Amino acid sequence: MTLEDTANASVRNAMDQGRQAADKASQVLQDGYDAAQQYARDKGLELDLRELVRKEPWFAIAAAFAVGYVVAQIVRRVS
Image 1: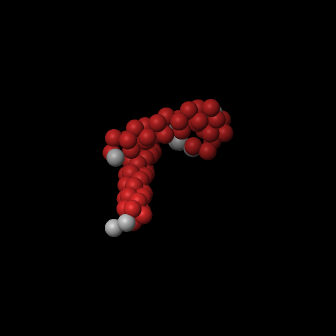
Image 2: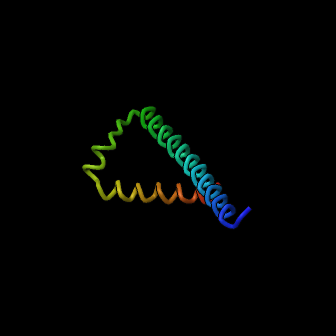
Image 3: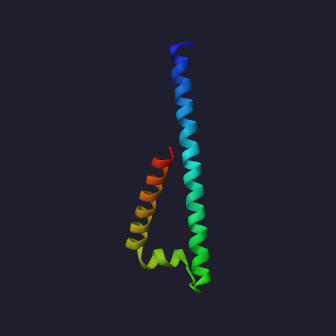
């Protein structure tokens, strides 16, 4: 096996691990989103995210940052 083959194999392996971590993070986010929507429905809250973003854009940005941070921590611990 040449050095180029070894490098290519390493890159493919790293890309596969990245895809797997992204898939896991995506599933965690989807599960969390579904749970939050179910909780809101159970409590009788009507949650319209589009309207919330229009009314409170800074809150939406802060929430997106917080979610991104949590996902990054989860991905870091999983991989």
